[in-house]
Amino acid sequence: MDRVLYIVNAEHEAGTYIPPHQHECFELVYYITGQGTCSIGQRSYHFRPSTFGLIPPGFKHDENHQPSPEVLFVGFHCGNPVINSLSGVFDDDKEHTVLQTLQRMNAEFKRKRDGFTELLNLQMSEITVYLQRLLSASGFHSPAEDQMQYVLNYMDEHYRHRLSVASLAEMSGYSYDRFRHLFKERFMHSPHRYLLLKRLDYAKSLLLHSQMHISEVSAAAGFVNDAQFCNMFKRETGLSPRTFRIRSREL
View 1 (tube, one colour):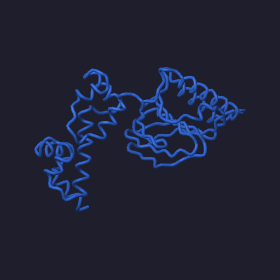
View 2 (view 1 turned 90 degrees about the vertical axis):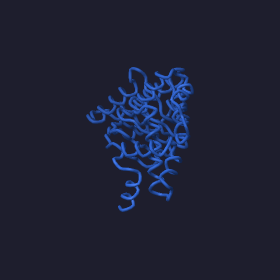
View 3 (view 1 turned 60 degrees about the horizontal axis):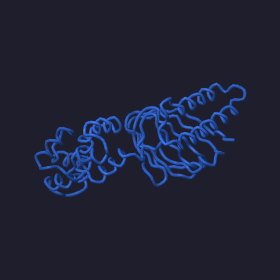
View 4 (view 1 turned 120 degrees about the vertical axis):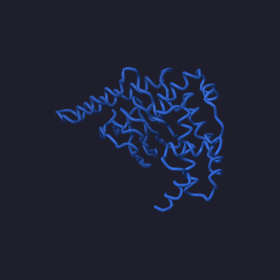
């Protein structure tokens, strides 16, 4: 029999970072709204609405939330041996079966009527059996395993190089337009803008923590030339790179 230890419905502020921690129990974290990244054990994942993280006992994990998120999470001990080998971030099905069961559990926990503890444990067992069924089906997979995630990983490692959206689309296996649509839907930004923001963040770090000349920063961050870098930097921050460096060091 599975045993529920706690269930919590929470909302975080945008930009909330939950540092690495671990539990002695399983934890299932359902992302109702919001997007961001998390690490579970040695692996990193992206989450979005209607996905959930499954964290085994003793696994260190963190979360970095971008928009304001709503999460529903439950801590539990599990008697299902198949679940004991699972960890990661997964998609719920089209009917949102996992979410609906969690919401029923949360409502039962709040009412605390006679026998609610036993009912919570039964509902948790229902979820673990359903997870086993879903995870064994070919159509149910971790978003971290699909081609879009591999493309994002590649972009994160090579954003300072010349990258074309056409080549990224080819890597994903989708058409150019379909890739752009799926990328923005999943990661909130177009591929072009995602690369721009990565390059600007890297440039800011160089401006703050090095003595590199502006032209060197521009080249190191992957911009075509100094003019493009300065124009993009000022458009996004309201300051020229030189002014940004001076003002940041005065703080």
